[in-house]
Image (cartoon, rainbow, N blue to C red; front, top):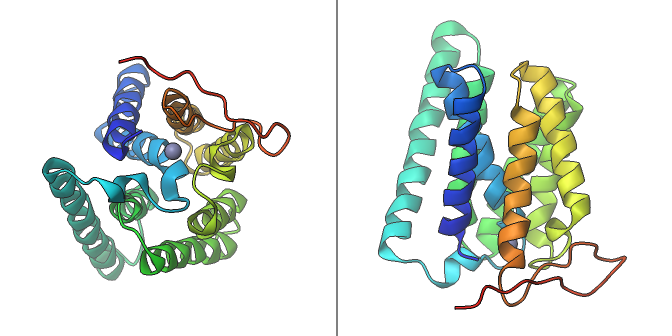
Amino acid sequence: MKGTTHLAIGATIGLAAAAYYPFSFNHAVLYISIAAFSALSADLDGPSMLSSKLGKLSKMLHELILWSGVLSFAGVIYMYFVHQSIDRAFATVTVVLFLLGCVAKAGVIRNALISLIGAGLIAAGWIASASWLIGLGLFIACAPWLKHRGMTHTVWAVILWTAIGSGMERDLQIEGIATVAAAGYLSHLLADTLTPSGVKWLYPLYKKAIKVPLKR
Ligand SMILES: [Zn+2]
């Protein structure tokens, strides 16, 4: 399944959450970022599907996301120097934008960069004693080195991702984060199940791929 398809599904889930939960602009941005990232994060593993066939539109979209990440990062630094504090939701969106920008790249440098971001999150989670952030950091640090459509495409990963989401929800005290994260991640596996190669949902307990290929 193409990355842009996953991204579109994720964004839709985020929009639905923004409509469903009590509305605020910041929460809406957060829901959409988390859902979009959750829908794509399973493909932080192995050689990216996105890198093989990047259309002109998705290339532009990808550049746009990466540069908004850079801008947003500059914003976080600015706020840190002016207010001596970092807005957590803002910082979350920054990390998400960076990773979304990276997901479409391929190669060792891309993997190392993603692992570096993961290591940064582990350190941040350690300092803030937030175990969900350490868990997220570990996921992000390890994922690039795993085989494509392997461990990140299983129910175990869904459970782990949901646990990370609920930790984040408790920490930020914003209702719905866990649900949005779980729905986003699950949407990825469901979408991949509709492709000819399918998904090994129960790997390594059950090693065969489960698939319901869409007929053209
Ligand atoms: Zn996938």
